Image 1 (tube, rainbow, N blue to C red):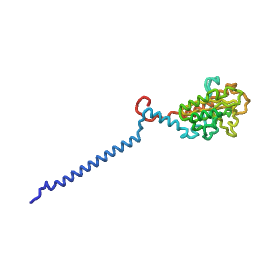
Image 2: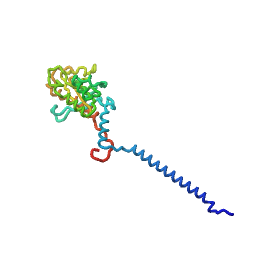
Image 3: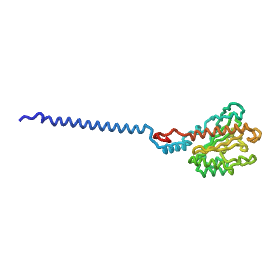
Image 4: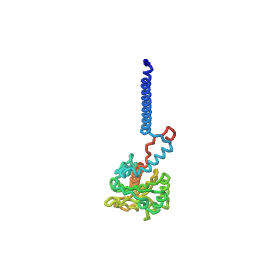
Length: 270
């Protein structure tokens, strides 16, 4: 009895078809895995999607942590440009000047580096975390200023602290004969420098809030000129104020600058 050729070939053909099916399944699974991997990689590499509220939360966190992330020399740069207005000079153009850093104080708590116990109480009440300070002089070493930053937990806390320091009962700045100090930052004194001669009795002192930071500054004469109240010397008052404000504003701009926005859907506020 002879075998049927077609019958004898069926198992072989079925085996070939089976192997092809298995190969196709393996190929399909491999392609699916590749697609999934590519999708996962794309999710990692492409910007994440954030709502407007999430975006603000991330930005606020970045600003609030900047004082810990930036080097002290970046927060308080070695040289800071500032301007004396053309009005004071009675000229057509302002005068471009530079403040020079003479020292950065170690980071400290919130009670020891302000001038009054009332100021320390304000900072503690509003949740102060740390105080950063640095001292600058003008290029002629005639004026000296210390700029301080109190780190608060929120924008609202910084604004509240600034308003409290501005209250009349916490400052004696308007009384030229008083020996009490205005509520604000305590000047950093460095031996052998202009800051060692800082005269508190003729200082200017102010503060402002920027983000979660309370920026304070105090400035005064650093040389041995006659004791003339700063308000009686219009030019000195203007240059001293420009020096202090110029440094303080640059420090504030560095710490409280808005970061690049996280990627978010194209909706209002993003």
